[in-house]
Length: 116
Image (cartoon, rainbow, N blue to C red; front, side):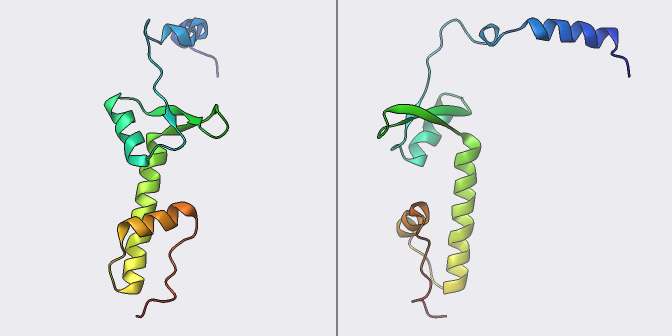
Protein backbone atom coordinates (compact mmCIF):
# COMPACT_ATOMS: atom_id res chain seq x y z
CA UNK A 1 0.00 0.00 0.00
CA UNK A 2 1.46 3.34 -1.04
CA UNK A 3 1.79 6.18 1.43
CA UNK A 4 -0.55 9.10 0.85
CA UNK A 5 0.97 12.52 0.18
CA UNK A 6 -0.38 13.88 3.48
CA UNK A 7 1.21 10.97 5.35
CA UNK A 8 4.53 11.60 3.59
CA UNK A 9 4.34 15.30 4.49
CA UNK A 10 3.56 14.46 8.12
CA UNK A 11 6.36 11.89 8.25
CA UNK A 12 8.86 14.43 6.83
CA UNK A 13 7.94 16.93 9.56
CA UNK A 14 8.10 14.37 12.38
CA UNK A 15 11.43 12.95 11.16
CA UNK A 16 13.01 16.42 11.58
CA UNK A 17 11.81 16.91 15.16
CA UNK A 18 14.10 16.31 18.11
CA UNK A 19 13.25 15.97 21.79
CA UNK A 20 14.60 19.43 22.62
CA UNK A 21 11.86 20.95 20.44
CA UNK A 22 9.30 19.45 22.84
CA UNK A 23 10.91 20.70 26.04
CA UNK A 24 10.35 24.13 27.58
CA UNK A 25 13.34 26.49 27.65
CA UNK A 26 13.70 26.24 31.41
CA UNK A 27 12.98 22.94 33.02
CA UNK A 28 13.65 21.59 36.47
CA UNK A 29 14.25 17.87 36.71
CA UNK A 30 12.08 16.38 39.44
CA UNK A 31 13.56 13.24 40.99
CA UNK A 32 13.12 11.09 44.05
CA UNK A 33 15.37 8.92 46.19
CA UNK A 34 15.21 5.17 46.57
CA UNK A 35 14.38 5.71 50.26
CA UNK A 36 11.35 7.96 49.65
CA UNK A 37 7.96 6.60 50.67
CA UNK A 38 5.28 5.78 48.10
CA UNK A 39 2.93 8.49 49.42
CA UNK A 40 5.71 11.08 49.15
CA UNK A 41 6.55 10.10 45.56
CA UNK A 42 2.87 10.01 44.60
CA UNK A 43 2.49 13.55 45.97
CA UNK A 44 5.69 14.66 44.22
CA UNK A 45 4.45 13.42 40.87
CA UNK A 46 0.96 14.86 41.22
CA UNK A 47 2.08 18.25 42.56
CA UNK A 48 4.48 18.64 39.65
CA UNK A 49 1.97 17.29 37.13
CA UNK A 50 4.37 14.65 35.84
CA UNK A 51 3.89 10.96 35.20
CA UNK A 52 7.39 9.70 36.03
CA UNK A 53 10.66 10.66 37.68
CA UNK A 54 14.22 9.33 37.84
CA UNK A 55 15.14 7.52 41.05
CA UNK A 56 18.43 8.25 42.81
CA UNK A 57 19.77 5.11 44.52
CA UNK A 58 21.19 6.40 47.80
CA UNK A 59 23.34 3.29 48.35
CA UNK A 60 24.89 3.18 44.88
CA UNK A 61 24.96 6.99 44.62
CA UNK A 62 23.59 7.01 41.08
CA UNK A 63 20.38 7.38 39.14
CA UNK A 64 19.46 3.89 38.03
CA UNK A 65 15.69 3.69 37.61
CA UNK A 66 12.47 5.52 36.85
CA UNK A 67 9.25 5.35 38.81
CA UNK A 68 5.95 6.28 37.27
CA UNK A 69 2.40 6.84 38.36
CA UNK A 70 1.32 3.48 36.96
CA UNK A 71 3.95 1.69 39.11
CA UNK A 72 2.67 3.36 42.27
CA UNK A 73 -1.01 2.86 41.49
CA UNK A 74 -0.40 -0.79 40.57
CA UNK A 75 1.33 -1.57 43.86
CA UNK A 76 -1.45 0.22 45.76
CA UNK A 77 -4.13 -1.86 44.03
CA UNK A 78 -2.23 -5.14 44.48
CA UNK A 79 -1.52 -4.50 48.16
CA UNK A 80 -5.12 -3.45 48.80
CA UNK A 81 -6.45 -6.59 47.11
CA UNK A 82 -4.00 -8.79 49.05
CA UNK A 83 -5.04 -7.18 52.31
CA UNK A 84 -8.69 -7.78 51.47
CA UNK A 85 -7.92 -11.42 50.73
CA UNK A 86 -5.99 -11.80 53.99
CA UNK A 87 -8.93 -10.33 55.91
CA UNK A 88 -11.41 -12.58 54.10
CA UNK A 89 -9.36 -15.70 54.85
CA UNK A 90 -8.67 -14.79 58.47
CA UNK A 91 -12.12 -13.39 59.20
CA UNK A 92 -10.49 -10.54 61.10
CA UNK A 93 -9.14 -7.10 60.24
CA UNK A 94 -5.48 -7.01 59.26
CA UNK A 95 -3.48 -4.15 60.74
CA UNK A 96 -2.54 -1.97 57.77
CA UNK A 97 1.03 -0.94 58.72
CA UNK A 98 2.08 -4.48 59.63
CA UNK A 99 0.49 -5.84 56.45
CA UNK A 100 2.19 -3.28 54.22
CA UNK A 101 5.58 -3.75 55.92
CA UNK A 102 5.42 -7.53 55.39
CA UNK A 103 4.17 -7.26 51.81
CA UNK A 104 6.81 -4.72 50.82
CA UNK A 105 9.59 -6.78 52.42
CA UNK A 106 8.54 -9.82 50.40
CA UNK A 107 7.83 -11.82 53.56
CA UNK A 108 4.09 -11.99 52.96
CA UNK A 109 1.42 -12.36 55.61
CA UNK A 110 1.58 -15.50 57.73
CA UNK A 111 -2.00 -16.70 58.03
CA UNK A 112 -1.08 -20.02 59.68
CA UNK A 113 -1.65 -18.76 63.22
CA UNK A 114 -5.09 -17.31 62.47
CA UNK A 115 -8.16 -19.30 63.33
CA UNK A 116 -11.02 -19.60 60.90
